[in-house]
Image 1 (cartoon, helix red, strand yellow):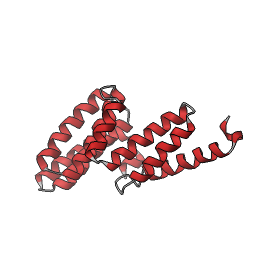
Image 2 (cartoon, one colour; image 1 turned 90 degrees about the vertical axis):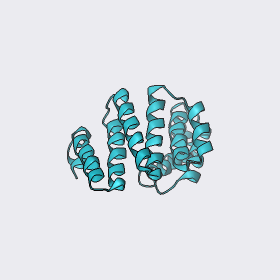
Image 3 (cartoon, helix red, strand yellow; image 1 turned 120 degrees about the horizontal axis):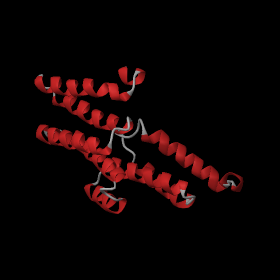
Amino acid sequence: MRHWKEPLRNTFGDLKRASRTALEQGDPQTASVAAVTTCAYMVFAGVSLHEVREEVAQSRRLLEGLRQERFITDIRRIEQWVDRMAGVLDADTAWPQTTAEGDRSAIAVNNTEEALGRMLAEDLQEALACVERAERCMDSVLATVYEPVIAFLGGLLRARLRSPKLQS
């Protein structure tokens, strides 16, 4: 509940403590969830990308040591997202890597980000094509956050493409 009532930055200490405690109690899944959540919240809270990259690297080592494949995928997705924002990795590099690995969630995220960029650039047809690719790659990992975003973008783009009045 705290993350809904206070600034996200106030949750970092609790999440890190939860991860350590879970490890001490032999609960690698809870430790993994807390580690991944810490990294995501750091991005959302506007922590410097350098700091986030350090936390992501530390969390990735932890998850790999715990052999938590499901959460390794999540931390790699966050790592890729942060690297793209930091200019360390570009879409031309990230997309083939994601596609080759068959990470449907990351493919959906990449297409959603690309759709937003295309929409801002007024390339509506290509933005809609990106949304449709994202829709085909949707999975349960993304459903709570990206599905409504993708549905909204798709509806908005389809309406704008059908109505010349909305295009201006």
